[in-house]
Length: 240
Image 1 (tube, rainbow, N blue to C red):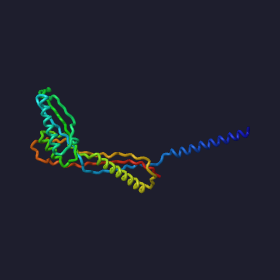
Image 2: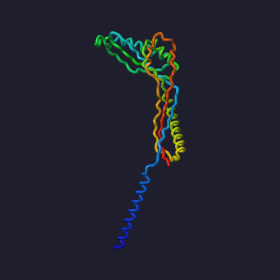
Image 3: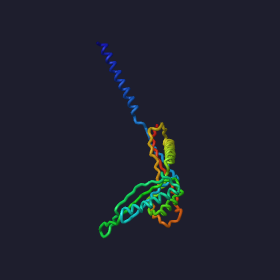
């Protein structure tokens, strides 16, 4: 009986020691590591390699059929001239087409003034040097409205810029962390986590407020605007 008590006591002591050991291991593993968060940034300006132009064909008439007929004539003439200038079918698309009764506000009430038809035609091309030509062709075709002209970059170039921007932002974060460690007096153990803020190209463009006049000079000068690319990388470093 006495031996059984001794054995039981030993088992209890071992169990307590085991529990204490496991608790200490757990504490050491779950202890919050010392960290520091560093942001890296990168900015660049690139030249666009693509342009998007939206032409709006607007026609009005007393009846819907006549308004549609006029619109079709101008639209077909525009598309034909754009193709003759070198654009392919893939570079030209119709965004939307609308035919509605036209109403105006007169004498404190809306008055019907025939019908209005709009057809928005977009071109997307790498032929940036021919922007003036496209606008002049649209004007000659009878188009009087340009809704927007936007300089962009192609998907292939965008991916190339993304990779370069993220790499440079990451390098900037590392340089900042190394300099801070040297100045403050800590050592970097490694990376705990990393967060990417994907680069966002900032496109410049918008409505072309000046109406395209039929007597515009040939080769209207439209110099391309550069595109800003910004990237941010946040890195959490473990330090000691």
